Image (tube, rainbow, N blue to C red; front, top):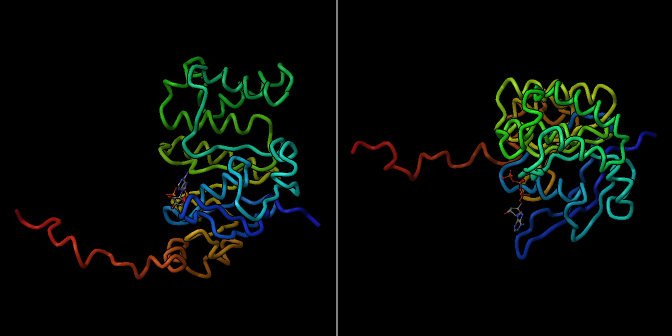
Length: 256
Ligand SMILES: Nc1ncnc2c1ncn2[C@@H]1O[C@H](COP(=O)(O)OP(=O)(O)OP(=O)(O)O)[C@@H](O)[C@H]1O
């Protein structure tokens, strides 16, 4: 029996009176290219933060590659790479120094780290910017160096929160190619996104969240059920019937 890359049971989190995640059973089979989608405030970031050990749940549990996130944190952290939302990086390091620092923190030998860092910089098209300080990187460059740092230790499960936000089409293509290669070798990617076309194009597994719950989950074709993913999403989260602005906003665009 293969162990799922991620499995959560009744994962829950509230902030004061706000229930952010209301008992989530998320499953992602190993080797998937998985998308986590949902409207703003659905609980995606909170869920990913709990699965990656960044936020302690109020209830329920999470396993990554069969290891409990809170009982075996070292085993879990050795196996995961994370590109979090609001990526915080060591701004006063150069891109190359950031990668080398991450690799050394992960306990990789110096020569191995140096070789991997140069390869990642080249693949991400960052070789020319390798000696520039991260603080001077553009949004897209930050995503790419963040992804490189998350990949350097060759994790088996990679978590990405909105990896394509602010990334130009050429860089998005580069990221996509790197991620495809990564999953083709049997590793797992889980990423959150609002871009349905992208999720549809890349993912073979989709989990849809709304209001802190999983409302659909499974192979892409099962979740789509003959519709576009965008339509399935609207049907599942109730957006199809939402007031589209016919009422209210009557002043908007009116002749002055
Ligand atoms: N640190 C916090 N303090 C208070 N409320 C929070 C905090 N983090 C998240 N929330 C609330 O929890 C809910 C879920 O937020 P979360 O960021 O997980 O959603 P999301 O699905 O990632 O949204 P988006 O797509 O807009 O990024 C929201 O109502 C949000 O306001």
